Image: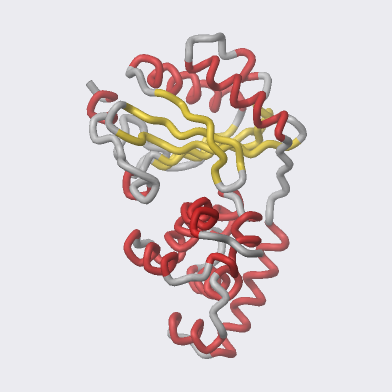
Amino acid sequence: MNMNSDDWAGYRPLMFSIAYRMTGSVGDAEDIVRGNDPAEHAELADSLSMAFLTLLESLTPAERAVFLLREVFSYDYKAVAEATGKSEVACRQLLARARQAVAERRPRFSTTRADADELTSIFLAVSNGADISSLLERLAPDVVFYGDSGGNSEVTFIEPVYGRDAVAAILASQLDRVRRLNARLEPATINGMPGFLSHAADGLVAVASFEILDGQVQAIRVVANPDKLRHIGPVSTSWHLKAVR
């Protein structure tokens, strides 16, 4: 697959998120993304999702590092061994275990354009004051909410939140705050999933994505951690101050 620089720009946020999970450092992740050939990774990047990236976090650090270096960034075993400080034999064994774990646990989500468009319309309507019941109907009974604010919000989600009623309460609160503080939601495709970018007047507030199966939202992932948003664009410095007043 041939890609020009404009095409590659669309994959950069996903590749950054993969590298960030591997290194834990924004600077190191940017270095990895800059040093890779977009043509080599386009098809893999297009197939990954935030759900898959979360799955990678269930691997051990060594398994995750070897898997990402070998499967995503196409390092040879010698380079993987040098990067991880392990022998090539050990790296092959780690990769085998990681591949098996990923194959066994990888979630299966199916999102049609119609589902994505309908869900987008519902969220926009609720953020503008419409009744939340239409959104509630689209949540799976066992829907799960993952939030990452980096501790920079009035509410910090240490653990995932499970269940339609609990997740609906979170969404109602957050969408009400979007409305009260004059933020806006911009529909976007986030790592292959439908979602939103949330903007305040002075910059980006959060990124949200939705995983859909059989027409129902199975998971919602919201990242409002400034350290994980800066590679996308300017981040709001006033949002959280407003939120806690």
